[in-house]
Image (cartoon, rainbow, N blue to C red; front, side, top):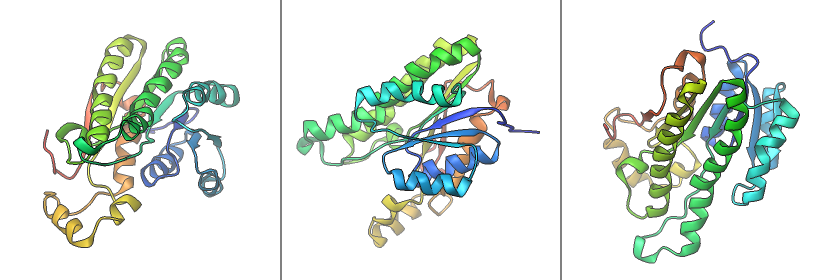
Amino acid sequence: MLFDLDGKVALITGATGAIGGAIARFLHKQGATLALSGTRVSNLEKLADELSERVNLFACNLSVAEAVDNLVPNVERLCGHVDILVNNAGITKDDLLMKMTDEAWYNVMSIDLEAPFRLMRSAVRGMIKRRYGRIINISSVVGAVGNQGQANYAAAKSGLFGLSKVAALELATRNITVNCVAPGMIASPMVDQIPEAHKEQLEKSIPVGRVGYPEEVAAAVGFLATSEASYITGHVLHVNGGMAMI
């Protein structure tokens, strides 16, 4: 069967968000055992109840370095190993460059870039021993083209590109692939907050004429997580409806 993840353990951060939840559902449907991480425990529990089996929950505040460093070992103790790491969690704290505070800069960097680095560093030890691993970092089209008011977010998401490419080079001979998925404008509570007139204008700038859906991002992640994608590494897969043809 194509895209079979039976027996594989997937750690997904930010699993309570729209994209994270869609990724969890997609990988679970492919047969993976899930280790879901997030800060909104009640939302994690709802998702676990929905999926009913092969789901383990790990509350983790990714802004706390010690908690991040303990996450993979905690998953390995309960689930045995981590085959797939999906660094999906991310936050925004937008402001113009000249007004951006140190706190806003470091908060976004700690969750959107430092936490993925720490989790990758931790997860690859076991992956190297087993000579198998799939790491998928959820970046953003903003990391490639920029966006006003998002210097911190764009820098962090662009940083994921470079981090992933270096890791891909270092781990390629161990049957470990490292790739990025860079969503564009995806339907989510965050997008719902955009004023309707502005949203319509943004949609007109997208060649396919609409926002994307979390399930479309999840499908890209799901493919990169499989053995069928073993010859793809160091790649940035843009899921943006053509809004930025890079």
